[in-house]
Image (cartoon, rainbow, N blue to C red; front, side, top):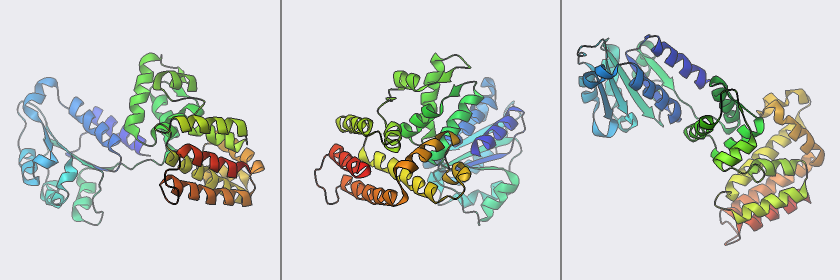
Length: 334
């Protein structure tokens, strides 16, 4: 997992086991920023940074200039640090970095932040980086992986979080790790280490309703709690900006698709691994499978596709999102 790899890289840096080049690439900027920031803040002392630390930006520099800076010698320090941010702006010429990678300056720590892209694994540059440098690929997490990431991050800092709380944050913030981390840091400011983050704390300090959210709507539908589901739908109708229909239909489509898969399993004990959900939430699928047989689930999935298209303006001009959601619930509970 990327989190373990990041910890390993940072632990090595803290122990002064430094690589001459850190090439950080991929779709998830959170880890790239984390490693780059750690190097920027911890490799050199404050006195050394004045003459030996340089930050360049891809849009304002070139590969030749980067190599020129990297080949310089440090002044009154063991190392110099050259950080290239937004290096993806140099994607057309990035292969020109190869000669330097083949023979890097031992006293330079070159950090290349190549966000939202990755190198061609077939090219010689990539192969050389794997041999001579730290080549780190930062991939986006799937949303079903985010709650466990939240739990692990908090556990590493001495905090706990309930499964529902982690799911609420994921549902509200998606898989944007930087945003999630910012909200977690806000909570850590007001909580003592060892504390458990609960839905109540999230509602009071982040503003996510513990009772009116997509997670609770899914739970109400799974339990066939008609009154609660329509109550949440009405709340969504009055707050469409914070609860867009497209997010709700996407979550419910994911839920019923997994429910369809759950029905097909001969060995239900394999459900957590097969469905990619925490064992804590499998009971929701067990309960929902009693209310919605396989044929009904297939019908609901078809209706979800229809409502999703209507929500995007296909065959339903100017129909309020709240009405479309209620239309969906009528079909689900029919």
